[in-house]
Length: 350
Image 1 (cartoon, rainbow, N blue to C red):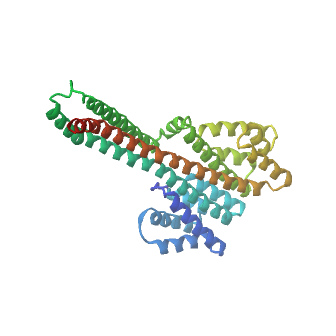
Image 2: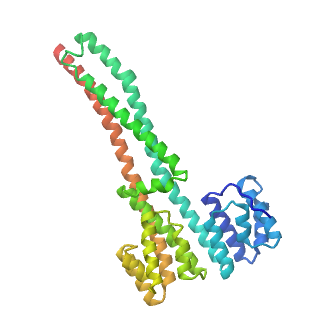
Image 3: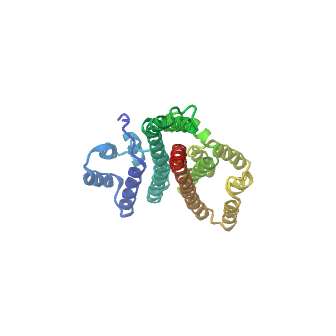
């Protein structure tokens, strides 16, 4: 049967599928029966319903779950590879549970990153709207009042209202430029040129740190799952590097690969190359010496997840007050520049 390519499930959909399959596998239900049960309970149409129907047809022909998932084309390649490894090693249940958590965490991270972009976008729209209102309605109204009062703004003591116009126009231009950059960045992020944009963002202090931590988290999630499924260390390393999507992390991991080829352990390679923070590196070494490497790797993956969440929250916490301050400063400075002449007039009358 030829491979049909459908629309990919989102991370939350993949997580729900993997968790449902894991629970049924844990209960002793075979993959073909489990998919049939899921298909009957879903029945809502859409990507998942199509994927389950296509998978059911493949499983009825005697194909493995991973092959059926690949054929329907609705699942990420990483999930397909992990499940194939789980089937070969006899640890399908554990892999499904781990994949469920992995994709749920991915969705959480994506939501936080989207919120970190959505709020600035909304604030930029508000700032642009306020500036446009100032330039088209507020400033012209004050200008007409002052021209009637003083005769000419250009030669009067109130001529600095022109500065308010200049300030608003410059601020509006900057905000429009930022909005266009954000829109272009969003389009590029969804295109094949995403790696180039990520390379630029890596140079921005906090954004770069988030991308590097996310890259490490993706690598560790894949690497630990491969190892726990019985994959050889060098093969697990090679396959997991493809998941990082971060150039600087990939370079470090490739250097770690050369250490592995020289006969060193992953813990020593990671520590020598500074792949993790020193405390994490020592934790890996301690786990290796005590014979509890797998447990430490899972724990380190969880710590990286928590660190990614903390960094993302910090980014949102910086962006929110910064843009609010820009909005208040822009509006306040503009209003002050047109209110001062009015105060002067009132004092002269008094």
